[in-house]
Image (cartoon, helix red, strand yellow):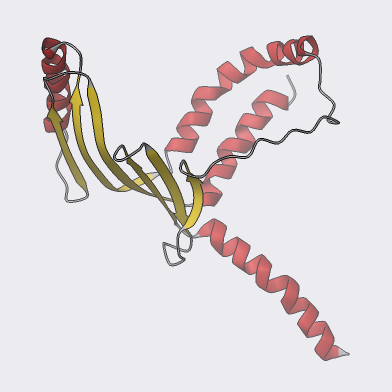
Length: 188
């Protein structure tokens, strides 16, 4: 009987420990976008400091299936609208603190941009490229950041590739979420 109890305890303890480890160790988020031959955006996560294989989060190439559920009850627009309108001031007041709390724990590991940009007017293209170049050259250079943006004065065009790898610890997103929820639903 005690052997069965140990197996039962292990069956609950191992998944719990894995979940705690996944929440408290860095996760790597890979973001890839390219325009050729078609627009495609892929987002994948690797857990435990990047030790796991990529876990797909989003791939724009996959087609979504629309779900039609005719038996689902729908709230009237007026009811949803009144409830939402009552919370807008609280959401607007709490949003900056939430965004700061969500962005702060995200660290940029790698960024690679290779793009060709053109607008319909060559003068506008020149102004845009001048602005991009000024921002690009004002940033400190590291081996983790590679930016190559070229102008195309022939006409409207936006092609290229972008790759970014972010590092974050998932549990650090809980406190900003709790603070946001308290500001929305807490005692006021």
